[in-house]
Image (cartoon, rainbow, N blue to C red; front, side, top):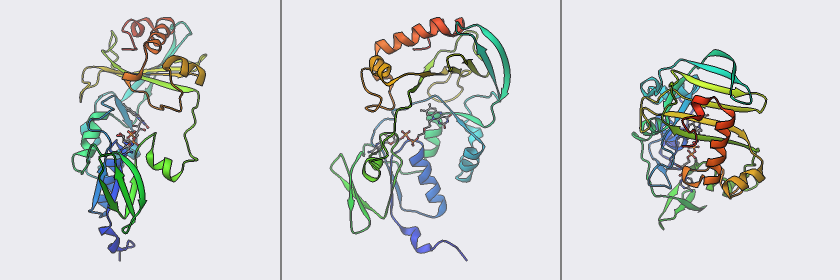
Amino acid sequence: MSVYPTTHFDQKIAIVGGGLVGPTAELFLRAAGFSDVTTYEATTKNAQSGGIVGLNGAASFALRGVGIDPDALTASQATQGMVYDISPDGETTSSRAVDLGGVNVAWDVLHQAVTQEGTVRQGKRAIGIAAGDRGAVVSFDDSTSIEADIVVFADGRNSFGRSVLGPQQEPTYQDHVIWRGITRPPSPAPDCFSCYKNTDEGVVLFVSDPITRGVHSGRSDWLLYQNVTADAYRDLLGITPQSRYYVQAKHVTTKAREALEGYAQAKLPEHLAANGIAH
Ligand SMILES: Cc1cc2nc3c(=O)[nH]c(=O)nc-3n(C[C@H](O)[C@H](O)[C@H](O)COP(=O)(O)OP(=O)(O)OC[C@H]3O[C@@H](n4cnc5c(N)ncnc54)[C@H](O)[C@@H]3O)c2cc1C
C-alpha cells in the first residue's frame, strides 16, 4: 500500500526560478510521480555561466536518484587539494594536501544536465501571486498568468516569493564578500584545487586547476574571501549590500577592480598576482 494518496499526483505545480534549484526540484517532483510540473525562469539567458561547483556525497547521491551521473559531469580530475598558509605579504609558510571528497563540476554543465529533461520556460518573471480557483494564480511580467495547485519558489537571493510570503525574513549583510572570477590559469597552473590562507587577516583564496568542461574550459576559477564592512562595500561598488546581494561582472566598478588588484599585488603569492586575479 502506498503511503502517498495517488490522487495528488495530478496536481499542477509551478516552480518559480530556473537556476540550479528550480529545475532540480522539477526533476525530483517528476521522479516522485507528479507529471504536471513547469518551471518559470525570469531571464532568457543564464546570468551565471560558469565556475566550479563542488558536489558533496549527498548531492551526488541525490542527482543519481534522478538519473544524472555527476561523475560524467566532472570538470576537474583532481581528487586532492593543497592548502598553503601564507604570511601577510604572500610568502608560503606551510602547506599540506587535503582530500577534496565529492565531485567538482562546472556550473553551466550541471545547469544543462538538470534543465534538459525538464520544461523550463524562459522570459517569465513572476511579479504577482493571488488566490485562484485552483490554488494560486501567478502573473508574469509578459502580461501572462497561470494557475497552479502548488507554487514552489526557487528564485534565489532576491526572491519574489520571500517578499510575498515572508517579507520580514530579509537577508542581512554579514560584512563578508566572496569575489569570484574566471581567468587564464596562473603560471605554473595548479594541478589541483589550491587554497591560500592568510589566517592573520582571515583571507582565503581558492584557485582551481584548469576547468575541463563547459564554456570556461582551459581557464581557472578563483575566489577571494574578504571581510568588507557595509560602508566599504558602498564605497567600492557604489550601492548598499542590501540593494544587490549578488554582484555580476558588469556591476563590478573600476574602483573595486583596482582595490582587488592592489590587494593581490600586496598580499598574494607573486604567481597569482602576476596573472591579474581581478580579470
Ligand atoms: C560558479 C558557482 C559555484 C558555486 N559553488 C558552490 C559550491 O561549491 N557549494 C555550494 O554550496 N554553493 C555553491 N554555489 C552557490 C550555489 O550554487 C547557489 O547557492 C545555488 O546554485 C543557488 O541556486 P538557486 O537556484 O537557489 O538560486 P539562483 O541560482 O540564484 O537561481 C534563481 C533563479 O531564479 C530566477 N528568478 C529570480 N526571480 C525570479 C522571478 N521573480 N520569476 C522567475 N524567475 C526568477 C533567477 O533569474 C535565477 O535564474 C556556487 C554558485 C556559483 C554561481
